[in-house]
Length: 487
View 1 (tube, rainbow, N blue to C red):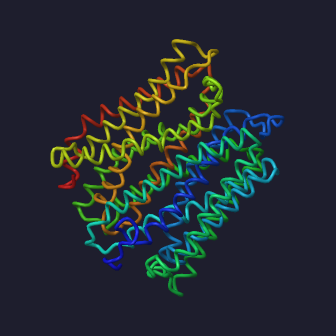
View 2 (cartoon, rainbow, N blue to C red):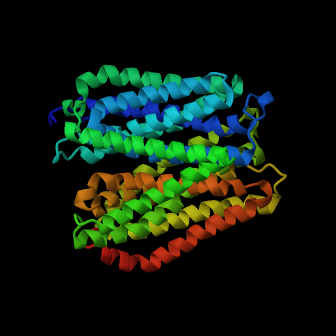
């Protein structure tokens, strides 16, 4: 791209386009997520769907898992069919329609149609916007890292504002008004993207880099049809044997979300395209991947378990101001925005003395575990029948987000460095699959969370995280050796 283009804060003008697109996409997604759990389990008289709480929490988790699983499809559609610019546009259109469906009072069927649309839409949009940011810079442009930092700030501002505005609208009017705000957000993002994108996005993004050739088309269509038929057969068999229900469909997705990364690892370790050195690096990545799964399981429970705690066991009246339970979802992006610059400076100051990737991972897991131990304290001190100060939730989020600073950016970086050449783009999907597997596991364990089991739930998950951190710390010298010179 043109090195001289510095129209936006010294960066290419296209960075503003992509940052705003992602700002509105995150606004719509996190706005919807801030109130969705409550919409599912609130009684019909309170404007909800009246699901039982374990089912609502389980759906919430599997929804998150599906969003990350679908990013694998987004990479394929962009690389082989549409190119990233059109893939992102159509992803945004599907997301907008998903929110529109939820904004209409059509009950549970609308919920599941909306989930399907948003899952596919986010899968098309999410991985490709990031890739287009990279495409704004030439390979040796020193502004690249700084450009990604600005882009990430845009994402977090979208995630920060939505949980304030959308729950407020839901509290003042109803859930459907809240969901319609999410739809409007995505609509604004799409208009911005469509008008600006023509002028400011790398023209290469209009073409698929590796388009499907005519002789491959038949094989691709056959494989896609076989997958659809296989899923249909499983669902029909479930229906005929009387086991077709929400819980069993969620279990099926859980098995798939955990099985997919395992399949990938086996494939990479057995592939003839992978050199001995690369194979060693894949082995080094496996314990980091497992650590990431445990970390994301705790971090992503913020919109499920902690959201329920906020609604049921937290004092929401502060003076004359009433906090809507969904507003606590702003704490995640808020702490990322606070900590981001601090950690960026810390790593620069430490330079070569900073901890290696495996060390950052086990430190991140310790903080994740401690964020759950924090939640044991108010329940032990005051019991489950007393509503406690909202500061307990603030403290829990403040602690877990230190863990995110140690794991999330480092994980992205180490994933690209340890990837075998033949699997470089697929390895990037592996990082998304860690989050997918984590939320799929959550979909099973959140069913065990009730006020009576709360102390056990927070304690066990928190302790597991800290124990895995200790095991990882012991394994670190071995992992560093397997990384073959990658730090």
